[in-house]
Image (cartoon, rainbow, N blue to C red):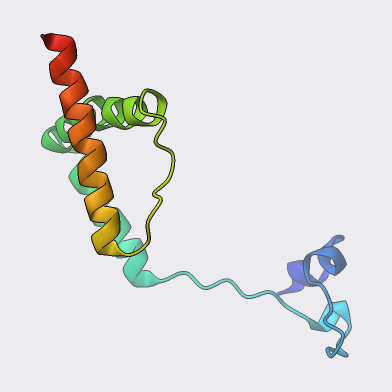
Length: 108
């Protein structure tokens, strides 16, 4: 706590609300980190650093990114025009079918 009180930019970091009458020296910023999140993150890092995890990450980056880039650039699809899960699902099916038909057309 002593280091925080001697911070030269504390007044800019911890702004005073109009209703707050405390001086900058009496105000503190609190940062909370979830222990569960840290445990989950360590478990995931352990999984993805295995040989199988590395292979899955490499395959995913090769397979998925190219398709999404082609849909965005070639089909000029940047956002959904409808709302709601059902409508967005139908719209995505149509975009996917258009992509697959174009892919088939270029192979023929």
